[in-house]
Length: 399
Image (cartoon, rainbow, N blue to C red; front, side, top):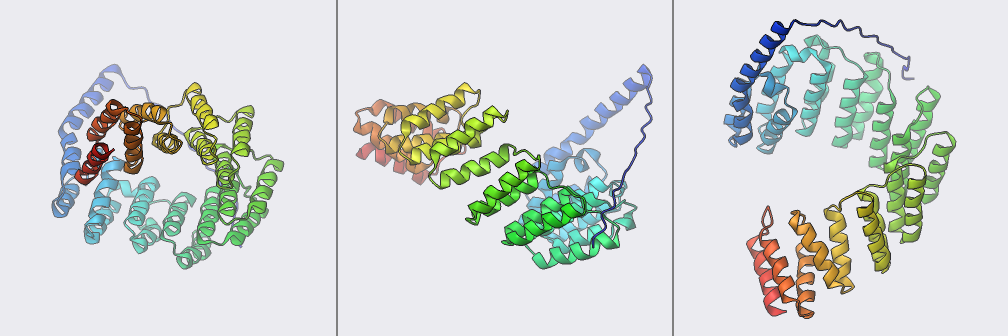
């Protein structure tokens, strides 16, 4: 049985108020240091040669502006992994462990996650097991980081081996985050029963499931076409006083749309508002798509208008859905208006939808509107390929 004794920590911080002169001196030092060190970030971002990138990062191993910049760290490791220079990644990350930052658990967690992204799973595990060698405290936070890496690696055997050994060896008590990672892992592996039993077992040991736990199980059950179990979990969650959140509602609305139950999805969206949960772009897109699929374009338009009335701006998926189905129903004027609005924001529907719109506009004798859409398509950033643009030109010429 895993140990789940509660751990409490109390941190005391002393506050020191510096003098005005001291503050000014510190600010000047920081600003001067920043102006000297900032070019390193620019150089790292611009460097494309893996070997030069490696040496440049290594030369800045003590540069806090580089080391504490999460993007620079992740981008460097990602590009080295893309070049399959895992030797360089190992050299850089192992070196970082020996520096003062290697004594901070948060920094070691970053190293574990970076090894995971580079798919260097053994290195991620070794980093966790060797934390004490660098004087770094090991807690459930770094344990959870390894769980995430193993979950993404989809190595169930390694996950179970780590779970059976590490908590007892290092006296680590699992928390709700640990449980949620494991529940998600078992769901992803297709072991829904094990995920549910894990939730029950942890609950007996004092870890109460939260909305993330329930939402994960509800989503997995819907995907596995076990809607009765999903509905039962929803009811159980509510009965236990754990209210669904935006993600939970979106999961259920997506299921209803997949079942072609657009009206039920719309009712659920109204229920969300009634209990104080504001629908987001995902919610609106799902409901709009549902009405479009059902051929109820007028309802889709009403929901689209409601989205604007709620202060939201359509995202590319909503634009794509509306333009596609408006073209399909031959409402090319409204499709043109929405498409123009999207393109002016550099949000473009797919090339097939643009083809349909150009054909429809020309068929209606709206050549000017078609030419405008084509002109906007040419300005896309990043640009459409030469072949795609030529195909659009041909569509316009032949229509």
